[in-house]
Length: 395
Image 1 (cartoon, helix red, strand yellow):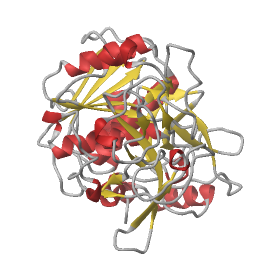
Image 2: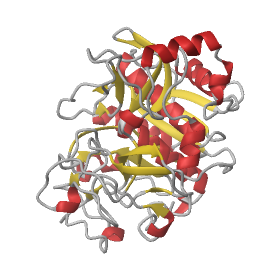
Image 3: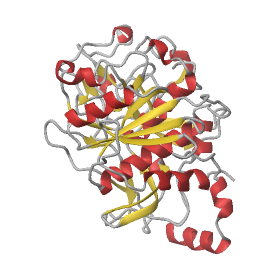
């Protein structure tokens, strides 16, 4: 059975659950009508602020589908699809930066890890730590949408790198100033090798915000967005980060066991402000300045990931299925942690190791004036970057 968590669910519960959602492919949760629906968790942000990049599966009326047992992709799926099974980090730390407080973050993380048979990651055993943007415990106010974002991020680190330690840093608000302060706070903590940022706003210059994301020796990942081809999105459009796009990931009868296409919502575009990556010069991006994405991972909510969250957002809490490039950014951050190669970050990886990636060659995220900005092809393209992890050699 693909999800060990389901072994603990009674036959009666499973029967009722199956009756409710019907039959579908792995990772997809249909509405009762059989049609797939999803909704963004966070509203569009005002200038100077960022929105979380998570998308939740819903019914036709837009209400999140809450289930008694986990549905969607779990740790075994993520590790199988990206050839990470059996790899360990030796306890390296992945930092998650988000806005506002999730008061049930540690408890929800425990529920997820217990459901999938993962080792405990708690404050008590030193695996989990939560702090505010000043490094203390004066947490900001609770926000249900960002709490779901936090649960998604923590669960994706757990799924990708079960032995990674996790640091959660909660910014006072979703302003770039506060989120940036939280990133700087994370970078000061010993053991942090990757910082994941599952949020974004409009394109912005590194001359204004770049100091928040420029941390040599620490891999900083950022979501490219969930609205398709729209141009630059900060901080993914920063020259200091690894910009992470999104794919649709499905089981397949092929040697890999999986197939990926571009997710139609994956953000892509060219920054109008920031310097192009020197390593990308031969990739044919077509952008005069910084192009995004660099790499990608699963983000399509129709082939989404299982997440547990008990801090209600508009009344919805429990097991849900999420997507968005909020899922792919912490996955890639965790792959960096597994690689152990972040001492020289930023470096030419993965641009000099493209053969160690799964190239995504089909799908599109919109219409654009330069084909590769929105349509998959062999090599680099905007929605999926250079591709998705095939082990850790490219990182």
